[in-house]
Length: 310
Image 1 (cartoon, one colour):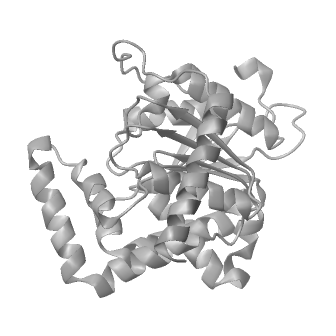
Image 2 (image 1 turned 90 degrees about the horizontal axis):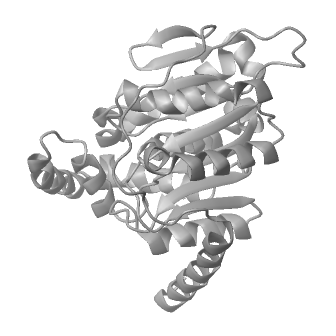
């Protein structure tokens, strides 16, 4: 595709998704002030199984008369997500009747794609071999660079459909929040945002870009393959995307182009957007919009929300 054609696709995607936003979003600006960071309480019947230092399974007991196994939510949080921040997503899905497999990734999984791919293979193995969980409907919720972890999983599904086809067939829905979409510069910026103190961010970004340029064979080539699998995934369940217009880690035009390409390929796509928000903090800043969009999406998937839990 030449540059002129790419520009035309981008403009069409922009017009399409601007109209969808106007038709479907609730609020467009962040509320005044910042909501307090309060860690939610989990239901008393939740058990936590530590599968590794960064992989935890949150399960609830099935109520009497339940019609079938609980759906499973694969939560892929942003790099460096703290337990208190993750707890808000865990509590939301547990209240909706899901069990949750939370998989944290570290900086090394991103900077060394070979390690990231091994990590993705480990998660796929857990989803395929973990007893009764291997038969459950599966929904994925990936935030920020957690989307890259899922892209690695999609790449493996694409490369070895016989081995991972069972997991692919169980995917009922994808939920993406604050995707890092664009150039290597956006990826490097995403890495730099993890630094504390933030004053080190510019240095980390420059170092990451230098690393990408010096080692393209072991970085850029793998990133490109994972991104290609994300743009043309081996499975296309309904998809919900959360994003904001002012996210510095996302090229908005490219994101609109991505959503349009999914839709043109037959994927049912919904988007919840805000003019002003914060990267990977939409749930905290826009809780009502976020929950309403999420619950409506889960309803479309046929994953009913237990009324007593809401």
